[in-house]
Length: 166
Image (cartoon, rainbow, N blue to C red; front, side, top):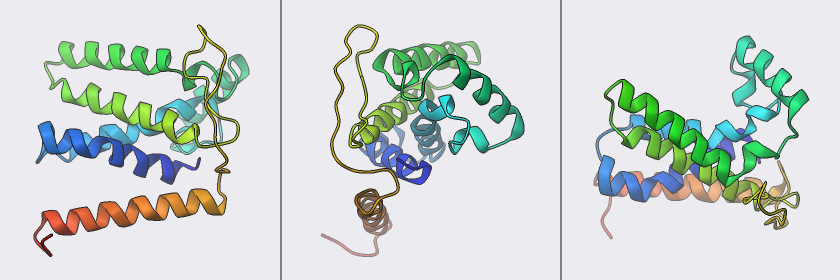
């Protein structure tokens, strides 16, 4: 999936938690979007890797050690990112909602990539089976899914600000 699709998946997955716990703190959506982009750090041409030259330098070296959609595309990596960011939040006395929303975004990335024929091996290294479907990266299916999510999020936002009632 493309970076924009991962970002909107991250917001979509975060929305129910935002409505329950984080309403009013839009930074939480930023953490969800960051989490939704993190697994592609293992690919030097991914959106997150091209944000600046230092990140791309690190990504290029990481990609020589691990395969794309390898260990970074697992539930284990999502949990490790959650533990690391929770430790940082505790150290800086920040809300634990930030690492939680990053985790939700990370999971959304794995779910989105599971729609791709290559799929995701969620339980690697413990299990090698993968989850996959037929939505090709950058294809019409991905663009349609992305557009539908953006339309839903837009309508939801308009409803939230009182532009219309259900």
